[in-house]
Amino acid sequence: MNLADTEIVLGILNKSGYSPTQAIDEADVVLLNTCSVREHAEEKIHQRLNVIRKQMAEKPELVVGVLGCMAERLRSSLMQRHNVDIVVGPDEYRKLPDLVDGAFTGSQGIGVRLSRTETYDDVTPFRSEGISAWISVMRGCDKFCTFCIVPFTRGRERSRTLTSVVAEVEQLVKQGFREITLLGQNVNSYIDSGHDFADLLSAVADVDPGLRVRFTTSHPQDLSDKLIDSIAAHDNLCNYIHLPVQSGSTRVLEAMNRTYTREHYLALVSKIRSRIPGVALSTDIISGFPTESEGEHKETLSLMEEVRYDGAYMFKYSPREGTPAYRLGDDIPEEVKARRLSEIISLQQKISGEVNESLVGNTMNVMVDGPSKKSELQMSGRTDTNKTVVFQAGQYKPGDLVLVKVERATSATLFGQVVGSLS
Ligand code: SAH
Ligand code: SF4
Image 1 (cartoon, rainbow, N blue to C red):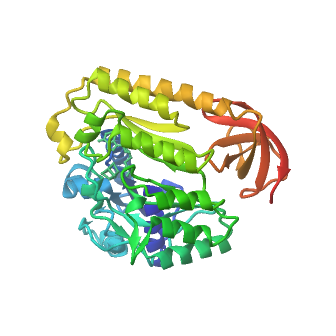
Image 2: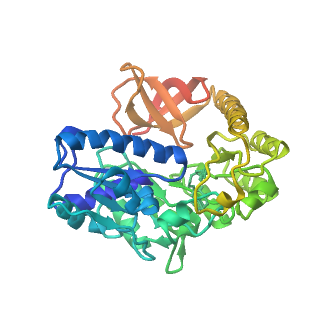
Image 3: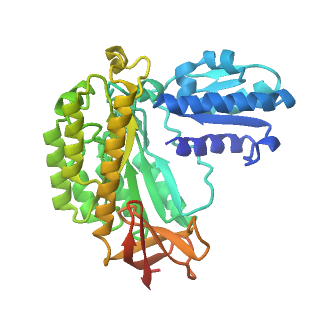
C-alpha cells in the first residue's frame, strides 16, 4: 500500500517538475513514507530521521518531510522531535508541491486532514519500469479491529470508480505491464454505483486474458460467493487469496472485533477450496493479543494445521495508542509473546515446506521476473499461486510465461527445469 502511495506522491511531484533520485546526497527534498501498524515500523523511521538530521546539518537547505500514517498519527510532534519541514498524512498529498515550495523559503507545513472522498482517481502514479503494477482501488478502513491503528490514520472507506480503474489497467497493458495487483485495506468493501469488488475484478480480468490479476486484502467476514465464482471463472484471476485470520480462537477474534468465528473462517476456507481447485491461501497472524491464554494460542496452531496455509505473515502484538485494545493493557509478557510467535513461525515453515514438497513433479505455469537473486545462471519467476520458482537461465525476458517442471522445493522456493514456453 505504501509503495503504491509513494508512486502517487511521485506522480503529483513529477507534474510539478520534481524528479526522483536514488542518491540521497543528490536530493534537494527527502520524503519518508511511513507505516504505523506496529511500533517497530515507527522506530525504524525515528532512527532514519536521526541519520538524516546529521545530513541536514551539512546541507541546511535540504527539505525533509514525513508522509503517511506516522505523519497522520504524530502530527506536529514530529516537527518538534526531528525538526522536519513537512508532515503530510495519506489524504493530503495534493498539497505537497505547495508545501515543498514553501519549505524552500523556510516555512514548515502540515497537512493531516482525513478526507471522505479523496481517492487520487485522476493522478497518474509514477511507476518504475517492470512487469508488475499496483493499483489502489479503495482507501481507508471502517472495520475497526481493536488492535489496529489503520482506521485512525487512513480514515473512512472510499472507492475509485470502476471506469477509471479499468482505463488505468488498459493503459498499463499498453505500456507492457503483465501483472496487476488491486489494493485496498479490505477490497471486499469496494463499491462504485452498484458495482462491487467481484464486478471490478471481472472487468479488470476482461481487459486482457494474458494479464495476471491479483488483489489484496480480503476480510474473511465479507468475502462473497460472487467473488469466489469470479476467480473460478477467469483463468487470469490468480488462484491465490490472502485471507488474514489473526487468531484461531473465537474468544480472541471477538475481542479483536474481527466479526467472524473460527468456524465461519474454516467453513469459508472449505468453500474456497471446493470451488477453486489448487487455490493457494496465505494469512496474517498476531501472537500475544491482550488476554490470549495458552489454550487460545494452541487454537491458532491447530487452525494453521487444519488450513495448511501456503504462507503467512506473523507478528507479535504491538499496542497502538488510541485503539480499543490499547485500553486492555499489554498483559502477555514479552518472552511469552516471542515464544508463541516462534512456535507459529516454525509450524508455518514446516507446513509451507510440506505444501511445496507436494508440488514436486508438477509442471507449473511461471511468469518470468528476471535473474535470480543468488546466481546469474538462474532466473526466477512466480506461479499463478504466487510461489517463487527458480530455473536455469535462458533467453527469457521479464513477463514471459514458461512451463517449469518442479524438481525440488524448500519452504520458500520451488526449483525446476523449463519444459516449454507459452509466450
Ligand atoms: N487490512 C488488512 C491488514 C492491514 S495491517 C487486513 O485486515 O487484512 C496488516 C497486518 O498487520 C494485519 O493483518 C495484522 O496481522 C497486523 N497488525 C495490525 N495491527 C497490529 C498490531 N497492533 N500488532 C501486531 N500486528 C498488527
Ligand atoms: Fe486494520 Fe482490521 Fe481494517 Fe485490516 S480490516 S486495516 S486489520 S482495522
